[in-house]
Image 1: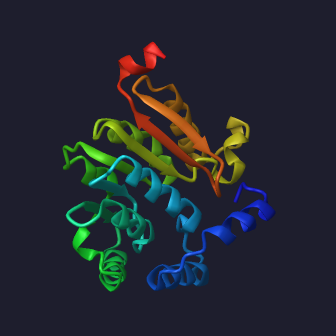
Image 2 (image 1 turned 135 degrees about the horizontal axis):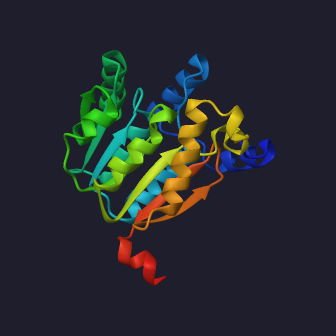
Length: 217
């Protein structure tokens, strides 16, 4: 993580998960060294989604459902979160966790490539969350921009990529280059107002404002 460990620990003391299913999922992630957004970023995602009264969210890369849990809480009853993962087993595990939490009826589970799946959904969504293989971030952003409503958000995890984004281009691998290009495109997009929050491994929040709004600022 990029954040100074003492600050990370201080923040974590305020944001420890208390819901039993979240605690179970966090323990599993720690045991298996499986990447999840964690409670700090989870709370931020939930807060952003609730702040715009999000009811329809598409996740690009959902794993065993940790981020889905936070978004499912945010959309409320009758809302929808589209969970995507290329592994049918992970999708089934996510369904199990969300059912145990009483949130499964708010989630549509899709198995397959997240980019290909999003192409089948016209939107507009209130939030598109991106957490796929990092070399795919630039394509995911372009697709998300056409699927999120004005006033909605694109939220993307791992956008500091353990500091690798600061490496010289000659030392960057495909994933690092993907994150670098993503950040450049997100900050340069005329229809997005973007902020990179240096929390954990970096979270980029892009508000869809429309091209005209940015030119007038």
